[in-house]
Image (cartoon, rainbow over all chains, first blue to last red; front, side, top):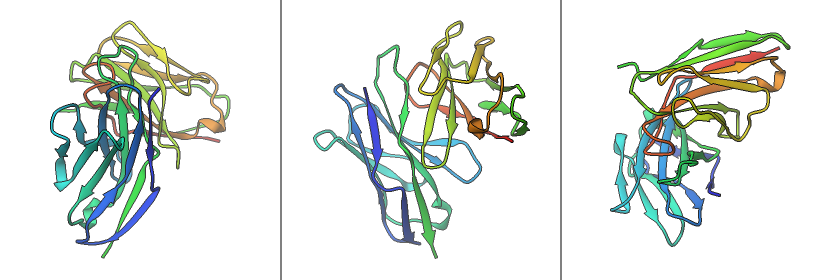
Length: 115
Length: 113
């Protein structure tokens, strides 16, 4: 079975500072990896995804993530955050080509931006 | 351009009452899902439908039933609501089961008193 762990439940950063949100996964087979963002009182929105190919994935709003198979990690980064990035971020994993596969979500990391 | 539409957005129930949460998607997706979101616990899968005509239990199915009415619609029913079912419920859909990312509705905030 697959699982995903988000190592930080809350990350406070100052505006215009860089940020990294950490995600580790566990799986015995190849996986798809995702980051979702949830703004207050809204649903989840896909930020970026890794399916195959280049290990550096670029998403919306200036975010990027790097797939590291040896470390089983998929950390999310942004070089300079803005107040509008305040949200909860979810890492998720699924197994491709599996009829029983569903996306498994981490418990979330709340990013708070200080002016 | 609606994507996934959930109704209602808010609901307050008394313990023991029943209700159905509605979900519809207009993207011709095959797979649909119901999740609940509770503080500190992320999203937990209640039920899913890999394709029209099939439904399966997820991680936390007890106290819930679902119906895949057609390809567009997937409803979640609480037969006898309990305070432990107070949560935010999200419906999602995807082109195929598991990949390549879900589209989520905006959620239903349910309080059971």
